[in-house]
Amino acid sequence: MLDRAAPDTANEAKRPVAFRGAGFTPSSSRYAGWVGLALVIAVWQLAGSAGWVNPLFLPAPSAIAVAITKLAQSGALWQHLSWSILRIGSGWLIGTAAGVVVGFAIGLSTMARGVGITFISALFPIPKIALLPLLILWLGIGEEPKIATIALGVFFSTAISVYSGVDAVPRNLIRMAQSFNVPFHTIVRRVIWPGALPSILAGFRITASVALLLVVSAEMIGAQYGIGAFVLQAGNLMQTDQLLAGVVILSLFGLAVGKLIGVLEARLLHWR
Amino acid sequence: MDLIADHICHRFGALDVLDDVSFQVAAGEVVAIVGPSGCGKSTLLSILGGLLQPSKGAAELRGAPPKDSLNPLTFVFQDFALLPWNTVGENVAFPLLHTGLGASDRRAVVDDALRRTGLGDFRATYPKQLSGGMRQRVGIARALAVKPAILLMDEPLSALDSQTRELLMEDFVRLLADGTMGAAYVTHNLEEAVRLADRVVVLSRRPGRIREIVTIPMTRAERGMADARGKLAGLQSELWSLIRGEAIDAEREVQHA
Image 1 (tube, rainbow over the protein chains, first blue to last red):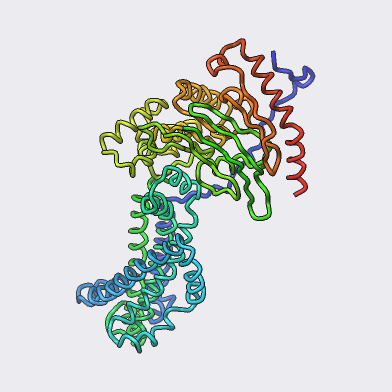
Image 2 (image 1 turned 180 degrees about the vertical axis):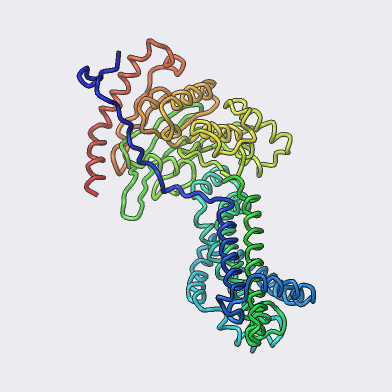
């Protein structure tokens, strides 16, 4: 007998309550992106085939595909790609290793934080490619200055993402571990490292792009082989199909690295 | 083993938080610490547990801990403090990793702790898959795994709904029944204090000083009986009368700040 609806309204017509909770919950569709991309390529191809755009300035996607196939068949693609991968791989690994060590030191030690943050704040904003001439002067004209430029670019971003990640580990978890007398190294390994990992992996995404940007720039300045050098040569010779083939390869490379980091995240951060 | 607060004073910068707090938690005794918001209850518990150094005075232990205790002073946290990347079993095993116990002994200890807290079927579950009450059970299982002499409980039920709170309070009564474990129990909730504690330390508003130490004149078993309700309610209102004025002043102070 809790229904206390007034008897004089009982005969009035009912109307639904208006729904006001729609929107603000965007979800990603698995196929929408690919459909959009296919649509753009189709329009681009149509524009090229119909002669709406000059192929010298914007070759059709089919011409770019042909250029990539020829590059692959001739072996030039692998030659350029392998040099770029070697430089990116070495530079990224060195920069990441140093960045992780320095980032953890800044995150865990008062002295390292005092010194480290000052240096990082002062040096991080410098475009690292500007240091390439200096690095050539110091290290010679071989691979070392290019790798060092990439390593420097990766180092600063990694160090920042690592110490930010360490700072973001909930202090209550560290106090919990201390309350059980868990030794320092175990706290670092079992509490701080996994707690900082989301930020570190997010940093990897950024440093992968930084490394790609720097390898192309460095190869354009001083290299015979490498995707950057190839793109520059093609541009100088007005071979726009080859130029765009290089750009497409760079894009695919970036996508592959992003996918790899995605797989790493799915494996290491499955608990989220 | 007794835990003693010996003339503890504490300041955070210019802010006096605790002033000359002295009392003791005897072996097997449950002491609740109550007081208005911001009176330094949690700070006091951190000092007692060695997580914070007092500005003056000391937290001291008297007597040897039980022979098999792996961590005589063990916290149960308000926010559970579970490692989200570890399963329930791994969270309970976490404080045992550095103790020198072999893998099979560790497993036996974890099994026992999970059984005592009703978590036997949740060993491989991650904290995010559990309700608040179950998460706190994991926190309690982790504390039990190291066989503490004294549990330091910082508002362990305050983040939970009333039904879960009631169930966990029953669990606490059961776990503390044999008197092998003592506890310092910080709470806002006077009902919890009179249900669980042997004595209740009432702190004044900041800086927290001991206003009174109230002894609960019933065993915990007696408090579970139906005819004890009236007596418990009386004790609760006695405690409230000690705190009420201070709580109002503390509330005004917060509003003015």
